[in-house]
Length: 309
Image 1 (cartoon, rainbow, N blue to C red):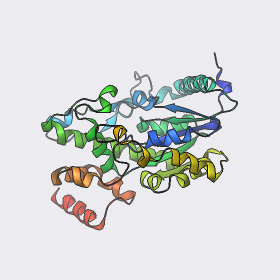
Image 2 (tube, helix red, strand yellow):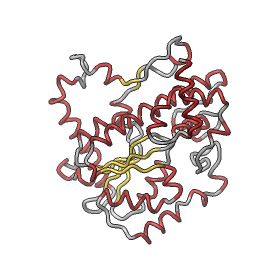
Image 3 (cartoon, rainbow, N blue to C red):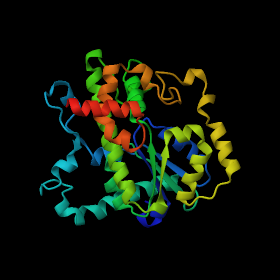
């Protein structure tokens, strides 16, 4: 059994943000670096940050419920296992369990003192996880939330890659409720990761936009390597990004039903109706504006929606 002292927190790198933001692609490229052990989708945050209410509530509620997590609702309840009152008891053991789990997988990857890169899709728990590992590194992977929702909408169609992950064909009458739910999830996660990012050591964090990753993946990888403390030649990064170029993915391995869809931005403008785009603005506008994803015309539309409300 691998003891937790074999796990160096300083060599832990989190990729956090929203799913469907190029995180799998990014992890694949980083996995090519010497001494890297990738950990793909441990889903820690989905267990620690269980959503409340369930998404079906959107379909029937007259007043839209506010999305949160079970931990936020229960943290002041003394009977709740992860109650704030008993944090001094459970936090060290939670950290030890996560450390031991990562150390075991890192040991299987071979090599000494590996760089452990964890792609965590349950990023709503970013604040908790980073508080447990304050010397770890954070890659905040950010993408326009409207493209994220558009990608998930495509995944919840018949015959897609996501069926094996628990997705299901979405009924037409449930489309708007699903869009609202996914928009709420993106907004919540983006806000939580941004808050954790702001509180983290500036020398141990970097924000990478999906759009930047598409435009110049080698430059994005170089920034990540600097934050991770990994010295990699630019020529090596260029080789890796060339081998993993999205445009080079064969046509039979990409498309609307595949995990790799377009490798582009802005597809939501064509695939979503005007009413669906309004729903996105209703749910996402503050975070879209905060990160510069809204045009002037869209900002005017947001203000008109605010006045109408």
